[in-house]
Length: 144
Image (cartoon, rainbow, N blue to C red; front, side, top):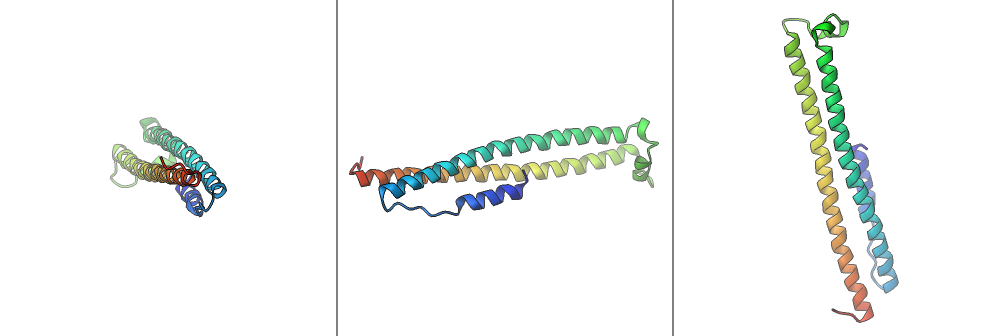
């Protein structure tokens, strides 16, 4: 999934009202919070998978770049386009690898930030759930 997709889902998840005027409303709120928590936990798993996918794609692209600039493939027209001027194949390969690594690092950093955001939201939801349980106890006369 794309980072924008995650952000849209999170925006929709956190936009709701907490109603605790009665036991029934508190129970409904608690169920909503549990659903949202489960969705966030699944999103966290998906973000982890997306990070792995970025890594796998990076390794695949590295292999592709190595093959493209290998001595056997220097006669390819695409490789010739890269080698205009005084640039050696090794220099061009290194430049392509650095660019690829930079792109990978940027994507992974964005996904890691999203994972931290999701973890924070899960923690906040769990804190609200504890508060809702407390309100439900007070309705029942349990103040332990």
